[in-house]
Length: 300
Length: 300
Image (cartoon, rainbow over all chains, first blue to last red; front, top):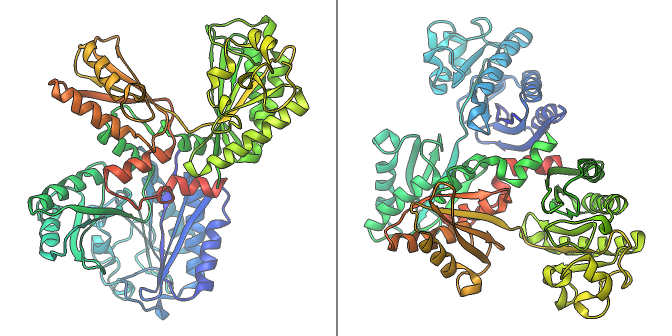
């Protein structure tokens, strides 16, 4: 069973009737489970999360992109978040790491179809990137629609992988990609020492020489306690258990204990299976031993 | 969503055509996922595992019990495992602990139906027991069909909860119950010291004053290493992490490390969620944050 998550972001966070129509396009595809719709009026952006096999999920993504192109005019759009498309980004995420190649293929096929049938130029990013200049989404997107309209085709980073070097007049461009699931994970300290949280964040994050695939900042919670707030971009490389251990050790050296940790949003079951493997030394443990995973297999 | 597991044991482990027909009776019920069929010729017994909501799972269990009564004659049955019914035991197991009351009700209703429609006396055991004498299955079952035929109704432990005090001429009786999921879990030591494994098993198991809800023995593996082999009868009370810690500490005191641990068969996702809660201090983490659990909710 190949189960893929798709988490497209659309440039509409204020008109519920538009968001509903895009979500309905997804929900209308047999074999796709619509899990979540979140919109942000300040960003004027919404995020739709759905899961399915590669065929229905690609169909649902295509229909949502087509519907967004019908309903959203970037010339009329403003919001705090950078964007260059009515559908701004459309990443496919494997629920199990061995499914990444399927996600990449799915992204490639969808990009071709979107360019050919909708006339929207498509950039392939992250694990689905064909050009090294396209690996990083923020480099592709730059300052967004208004800039891309002018510079598209002028350099590799601004040249679409599929479609002509011309933005769609109202729907702009789209970034279609594949990436590993990201886990938003926070560790709260039994302390009000913001410097400590910040220092630990700097020490453990990749960009300052810490642990790979960890982004971290230190911040203060409403109740006064401090938090190391993280994104784990590949839990196979650095797991939740790894960062808890690293933070606990550093906090402990300062005489501070971990109060609790929190997972923000969703995580794939695979992250729990790996936690069992490491925390219990259960090296041979697999997802097929989880009852609910077996039930899911019989239903999909 | 209420998801219940049912794991009936039937007194047939040698005739595949009979086992197939019983499994087919389960599989024919809409809304039931048939997960596993295992048979043991020596025990002359098979175990069928399936999962579903309370209504379809009760219907599937009833059909399987009816089919087994049609196809199995205990007067012709012999095997190494004690048994008193064509369907010998039929436990309902909650996949989340809050579902235990539903399992108990389901067991009660099924017992009434089996007695009324099939003429098979039913005993309610473990968490579904109405009489204290029925909590323990082995006390109810005693020496099996041949004994029960003689003593049924003679004392509380031998008096069915539903149906008359008379075994079914060919299908005997049935024990229908509700119980918490059991986790079969082994910890292998990096040692060939069988005495050490046995001593640790004695120290940690409940019956010798150790940890609650732990059954344990020490034994030697084929490769010469030794193992503490356990059944955890309530992972909420004593978890896999708890026994790994307890065994690791005792082995460490003898200069021995844990080589690896192994989960035998299936476990509910809830056991992994609780592992995350304890190992990561993620006290607020819930199953609804597991992507696959959310997908399952949309499908059931």
